[in-house]
Image (cartoon, rainbow, N blue to C red; front, side):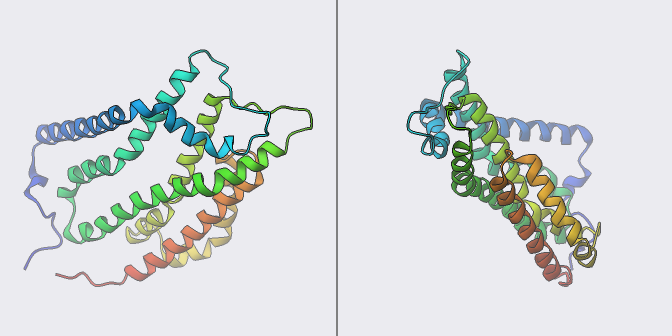
Length: 250
């Protein structure tokens, strides 16, 4: 019968130099994947930025438009957006390289849980970004573009807009990882389901504080980040409670 208390690979006995060489190869593959995606997308850099800006442009007053206050912004901003999008698109392959590097040192029962957690983390990361683009952006930009004083023309700068949306993409992508983080904390023994449930009031306050810090200064986007974080925290507790008592199968 296989021993589940030992790493399931002789790679655990590899010398340090071999591990460093493998790490180098994995990093090079990850970087090359980003470069390949970037080269495939760079021709459509301006179109990609227009797609990103569409939720704002559709809600600007009729006499308003987006502007570039820096002479190099019309070139660098779409270029930067495409580079970051390339990282997002290549993320599954990057995570696969990370998994291939660390998996030989895991126990079999750890691998059994790690596969669904890895897949879930990728799906949740993209789900957070999709939620931000299709739900949060339209509501937040509609509120912000209509809340200014009368007589003030709204002329958003393309570089500032990119900075804001990237911050929100990152915030929602990470926030949607809460179920995975919760499950890992419980299964690793750092905390328990009962302990997290008892701290629910503090978690609710905490997610609203995080929503305030990570989103633009409007109530809508803050609430739209805080409420999903709370729901995802509760889902993490449920899933962790379902899996923690399952026996280790051969």
